[in-house]
Image (cartoon, rainbow, N blue to C red):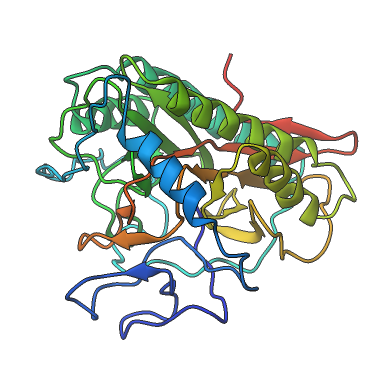
Amino acid sequence: MAARVPAAELNPYPSSPFAASRFRCPGDAALPAPPLRVAPRTPRRPEEPNRITRRAAEAQGSSGGARREPLRRGAVSARRPVPDHIPRPSYVGVDTIPDVCPDRQVHDGESIMRMLDACELAARVLQHAGTLVKPSVTTDEIDRAVHQMIIDAGAYPSPLGYGGFPKSVCTSVNECTCHGIPDSRKLQDGDIINIDVTVYLNGYHGDTSRTYLCGDVDESTKQLVKVTEECMMRGISACRHGASFKEIGQRIREHASKYGYSIDPFVGHGVGKIFHCEPIIWSTYDYEPGFMVAGQTFTIEPTLSMGSTQCVLWDDGWTAVATDGSLSAQFEHTVLVTRGGVEILTERP
């Protein structure tokens, strides 16, 4: 799950100081603040209308001129129970979204091992969830499988109850940019879906996500997904003891710009005992001051779009959907900074 931080440009709703000004909530100015997204701290270069139109058309079309139906919400099932013996994070039972913790977590040998355990479980759960992606499967079925696998391992699904989030995993389909809530909608041939898994095991969070292809996906969409993963890996390659955090966003931006993709301003974050903490990891202009330190753990999770980065927030308070209907893809790993470079803790076998 991407982190949520305050910034000077955020346009507050009455219920929160962290609402991003790029979101639009039609007909309801009193909705909860858009979760876990930040606005840029400097003006963006205006996006080229022709490129946005072209990318949006690619997202909507396929060979033969067929158009993809806009994403529609389905029915959300009841919250799934977690056995009483499984420890909960401190935010469970509190409906407000926690502030990003200002502490930067630096781990010793024992806590690194605990992080490894949590991240290894998150990676296994995500890998299993990916095998379920096929036409006619609902995102609620994916949530059920993820939930069961996590609690069977004696862990807690970190998104469940985070600021009132009702499910154990985020499933963001097609033009859903981030934080989609699993529901009864069936996946369709040609969809793409980001599955974002976080587990809380032995007091530590492991966080990872991946965008999967569903059935027969067109070539332009496959390229978006491929380039997004490449951007994540390029950002990871910047990590080492003593490196500037700014290098991460610079490498991601350079690669995405070669293909004309937009970068959505969702951010990565420190992770460990705390779900979301400093440092904030930007995927575009990187405003995070300071330098990486061996023992730090954080996520790198770029989200790329075929079109505009403007989103509308559904009235569930979480689901962020591109206003122009353009497709988005996201990838995420939790990494550990080392003296010699970086270790990907959520790397799949």
